[in-house]
Image (tube, rainbow, N blue to C red; front, side):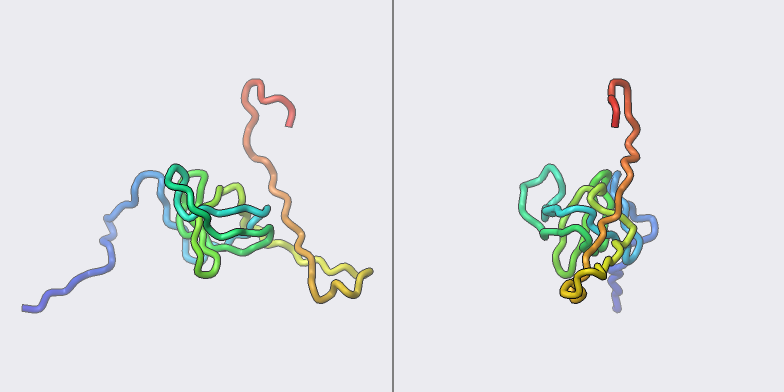
Amino acid sequence: MLMMLSLVPPASAQLPAGFDLAPPRDQRWVVADVEATRFPVGTAPAPGPSLRAGDEVVVVLFDGDHVRITKGQRYGWVALSALTDVAPKTIVPSSAPGLLTQPLLATPQVEDTRGGGMGAGPK
């Protein structure tokens, strides 16, 4: 008797509430230096990859305000607000020829879209 084992989950399989798989190659860029954690918020703290402003990462999983990312072979969790889908622009200063071999990255400005509630005060 021949038995087949399926490693692909059925279409009706569901992720736990609050989890969404990211689309394939969901590229994002880090907006400021941040230390990722290896495990989700609320679990034992363990350091993940160190990320610098302008680093490109790939989002693997969304979990509310946090996302699981990969950078190379390293995985980690960061706040969704630490990432942008806008690639940084490369700036080459024309007045400093010695810097032409090391272009600067312009970190995109991220607009604060959080609404102010009662008593939120000025932004």
